[in-house]
Length: 75
Image (cartoon, rainbow, N blue to C red):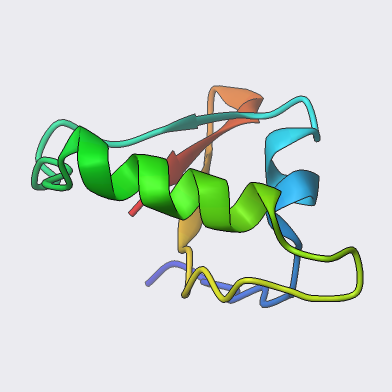
């Protein structure tokens, strides 16, 4: 049986997108279902947040790619 470690942590959206890592969604995951109208609203909400406020984005589960340590799979 493999020794699995669960590494938990908190990161901001900015930390996730500016860390030089690549995130891939495996082909077997279901398609993203929001339409343009909804993701535009979300993006505008994020852009208009005051510096001291946060927008809750939910949980993100990732797994490091064994062959490329800068690539993570997003589940």
